[in-house]
Image (cartoon, rainbow, N blue to C red; front, side, top):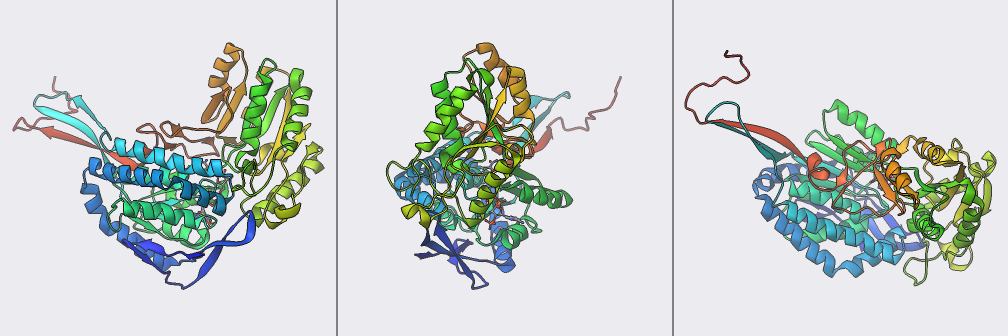
Length: 496
Ligand code: NAP
């Protein structure tokens, strides 16, 4: 078992509090993966000071040179992919192919952002006066507070860290308390890749103390947060008072429409993968399935059969489809929503309980659960459950289906299965979510395009992508005018 330290100013240091907590494997809760620091405000202060001091040097390091360090990090990540993927599975619980996919996203992001170091373009435009030119350039903000969840313990931190670093910011990173060892490994890789001291700092500890102290620290210039709506919205209020930019990626209640002309085999695969992949613990998980009445009964029958056939277990074991939930709190929350669904009158077809047979009793496993006869306003159709629970809602037309999808305070991801090109094209326009998939599940975003949700799912500053995505948030625009006429030239004045 590893005892973790914080990483401040290029050194691995114990917390000022001397306090530690344990990160356990959710598939076998007696297995302690790491002891991590329950840091305090003093640790946050030291980390922010290190990032503040390193900022001028990092800002003035040419972006292509910054990119070379990210390129090296990509190569190290690639070399250590198997080991890191296994750690993701052990510490967070997703099955190994998904653990490896988590690391692959970081690899892709590192290469992509390394290349962006040679771009980071602004614009040059003609000026209206002679002997004068004008351009816009991108400049970093300063110290960024990056606060991340546990469900993509390598990928999400890498999205934020690589994008902020390539733009020239320095970073203090506060990972989830459910995946601190993954965070340490990622930081070690950037250290090995040659990142100078102070540019990236890691402080672990609780969200209420470390996370809040960091986000509100006077020397932090920007915040990027991924997690629950409750925490994101509270941080946004504080950030507004501090005039500090904040990007938030939050919850979802993502929907798949299955039209009567859909290829049902394909739709079934997409629903199974979207609803039960990562044990339903993706912000983009498919939790509402809106099925045309003409194929509803057949589809539900096939879905239930397929859900019943999924194999639960330790994600490191071959042949396992669905891993555990992250912790006891998540287990209680999911079981509570199953009770709510039954009380609301939805029809429970399968699952509905904690799975405790044999070795499953050692972890936080819930049987894949399918409800039908769900109506759009039920709580199980409106609130984020974040577990292996799917609600099937019947619709009688394309129009009704779209209206059900959009009847949500969330707006992250939606999908339609149809073979009708007109429905597909209309859905691109009509589905009111940040991500729309046609004949694919609600999950599976690629890093070279922006990723973000509408309404309560996000702040409108997407992650990933290039200049239309994360880079626009992690840099700000400065406009420079240069007059080489040698005399006073007056712009914005009527000389006629
Ligand atoms: P969470 O409880 O909000 O925690 C997220 C992060 O915020 C953790 O590092 C947490 O630290 C920290 N935190 C908690 N309270 C804080 C506070 N008062 N001030 C500052 N930081 C604080 O969310 P989660 O349970 O880890 O993640 C699940 C949620 O994330 C779901 O709603 C999911 O939809 C969302 N999510 C969204 C996306 C997206 O891109 N839209 C992606 C993944 C997940 P501790 O761990 O120490 O509590």
